[in-house]
Length: 259
Image (cartoon, rainbow, N blue to C red; front, side, top):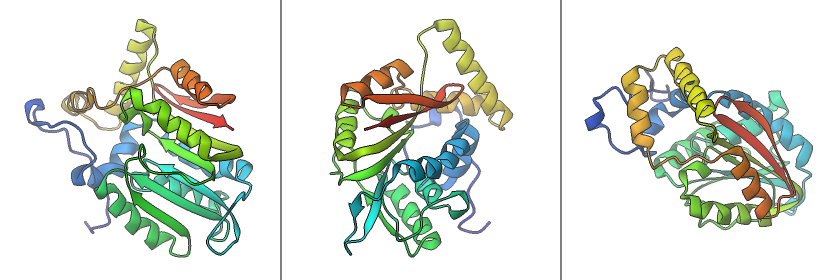
């Protein structure tokens, strides 16, 4: 195995009493691509649609340091830069280097270090800045698009409105927020069915009962979900007049909000 080969996710194969609280550390970074692929239904489809949405809504409303018209896009909670790379995928309609500026932000130094390496290696001519920071504290410049993939759910519920307000204020008119989250529903029977089918999805992708249980326990009080109604009400409360759920796969959903 080369140093660039993703590691298979075996984080939760130890007994439950030996598993620590979930965090985005070096161990998670090493197996993150495999973890996402086997744990988040529909994640590939969400990424594949990003350049399509961007082409429709990014209208080069900002300028770079050279005075050239570009679209600035934020990838908040960027992890290893998957969303950023999707936006630059030329085969899927991604941007040329002269068209876009990407600012990718993550609180985990292990994540941003690896993201920087991958993005520089694959897109050396692009204006990409990888920032190690808490998205609650980073200042956002005017932008055409913000991607918030599986990130809001890790913030305290009380902090989520402020983050969305900041995003709304940074977006230019016509700009969009793409928000992807794990969700829950209020109906107990429906929720039980969705959760069990999600565990079936993980079993089908090779996770054992111990691994499923271990990750569930590690994420308790770390990942806190909202309902779709709560998401849309929160988006409306900060100023987004239009928002819709464009994609859902079991208990994962992606929403679009337009300024």
